[in-house]
Length: 207
Image (cartoon, rainbow, N blue to C red; front, side, top):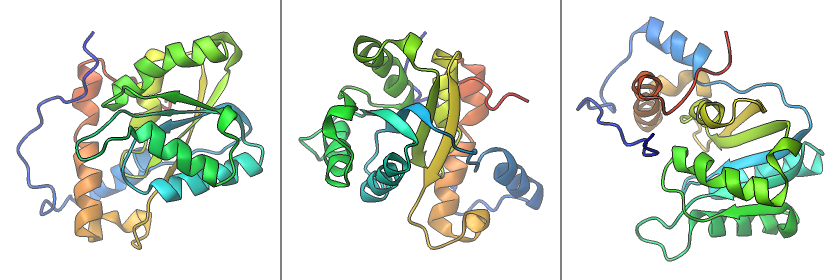
């Protein structure tokens, strides 16, 4: 099974595409979601260059609230940087107050599938996969449920929760009124069905 999620997508100008009201409602209902949170064994931080400080601060708040015991950060070196996303994000998390020895590291992943596939052996070696029963996925609002859907494809046994963040001033439910927010949401939304068809992700939440 290939791990790359860079499936060919239709050539659409997503910044100017205006979704119909029923599609907006469907995206709000099924894609732009957070779940209820309860204390989890692991926080999974997916690599990014977007809103790193916001993600780190959010993770630190979850740590202070006792919502996870361990974390893993996954992300490789991207163009324009000599440091991996993991290195940058872990440093921000530690600066925000999360003990560095509670943050596992994965430095090779270049897409969401690799985030999960490359991280599982790291988690297993450090903690034992059998000891992890629940995971909170933390990432960008627009990528939303693709994080736990990818995790569910490769690690179906574990309970998954989702918390997403962004720095847009536009309220999440009005994403379609902001050109850049709309571009990002539609870019991710258009990946869901092709990725499911190719076996990159699995349906989540169930039902």
